[in-house]
Image (tube, rainbow, N blue to C red; front, top):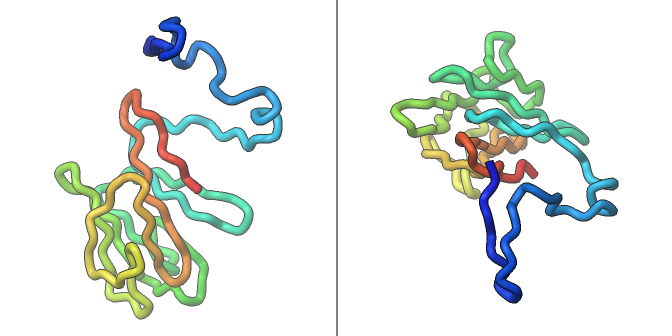
Length: 142
């Protein structure tokens, strides 16, 4: 489903999404990624790639332990480093008694509420929380 937009100078109506917004030359050199289904995700930069992990549980354990739901193999990350908790429409990141802490917006936190696009750092690794709603545009993951 696309929305109609009126051009301010001509008053001409154009269907958003009916024609590409990005020019061919730009599109040909761009990285193409699949559209995410509606849901909640964590985007993690891993070397030259961004790994996107769906949050499918109410509590997601992040750490270096084999039992972690999201396992990150970095020396500065504790075996049980952080939790991402989804409850009643609110998503929070919690420090799980880690040595190096959880950092949101440059401040060490025990608990912080996340909104789509927020970044948090654990053991020098930055993760971005991304929420994609039904029919909403997707926020950038870089």
